[in-house]
Length: 402
Ligand SMILES: Cc1cc2nc3c(=O)[nH]c(=O)nc-3n(C[C@H](O)[C@H](O)[C@H](O)COP(=O)(O)OP(=O)(O)OC[C@H]3O[C@@H](n4cnc5c(N)ncnc54)[C@H](O)[C@@H]3O)c2cc1C
Image (cartoon, rainbow, N blue to C red; front, top):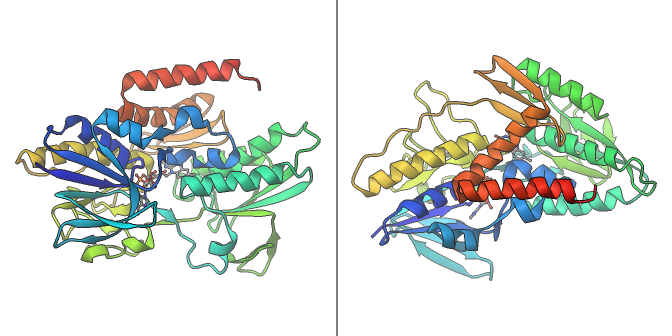
């Protein structure tokens, strides 16, 4: 009998738990350690923050999903590992600490925003790293929208997260324009690089930029934030940008507690360093994937921190780990990038394809953005459930009042 413990039920961990849970032998056990009760698709956290997320149809309860898909949800947060004893240390929701034995351990705890030790950023900014933070953001945005006055929101970082948040908020604010009690929002999107989506092709940045300008989002490019306080932000050139709410969505790193945990190798961004098989360099029974792992490729590159990469690595590891449990050897994970899709408001998206040679945009591309989420749903819950959820969503859109 083998016990596989997966830590983190996000884009990577939930897919892995579902695929393994449905495939392992009866005597084997799959446990998913996750602090939350429900799974939310992280690329939609900005929708939770903007109040446009559908909680009923787009979230999943780990407890009941696990029962149907052959894994057990253990609610708690990993804090340490004892590699000699092959035990995980878990902090439970009731405040107690417990240990959990494993034969194979998979760490998929994702990443958090990197504040680059900017003074005051942690204390005075909102983040979108966890569902709780996204919900807290909505509480604050909701109160702001009801104020009926001119309000300002600063968002630091014009990568996918910051840009999608700025566009969604602008769209919500636009929809409330005719409501005399709603606030008028000024949204400042602040970026240290000279363009939005700095890691994407130039043409994609230009098209995203012109779309944001149509939404009246103020783009402050080549602007580095030096400090944040209650009233606003100060740039490295001493300019103050006052705001009622401020978000930090610049850069990512793995959580600080992961650094060299249990003597495992990690990099500057706290990511666990793994081999191409996804096994950690120091311990063949511990694996890591998703945003918290530095996964090398044969050409010397590392796999990017993207939902699509997390999903593909999960599908690969499920097969490879099942093989290992049957006495086969692990296989290397080869990542083929399928491009990138960024949503700009509810009905529009921009995407790169064919190794960034083709850039598509528009309403249909927004459907493609949704497809990535639907494929995730198909992997974790099956084709039938995914289809039922799509139909339910369509019907809800048609029949619910605007
Ligand atoms: C607003 C936003 C928009 C984004 N848009 C895009 C996009 O358009 N395209 C794209 O490709 N990517 C996008 N991303 C990035 C994408 O969400 C991540 O790359 C992806 O979710 C990584 O998957 P993961 O499984 O590694 O981590 P996650 O999905 O973050 O899952 C990690 C899980 O681990 C759990 N966890 C954390 N710590 C512990 C612990 N100590 N113990 C137990 N469990 C723990 C968390 O609760 C979480 O459920 C976006 C991210 C954000 C925040």
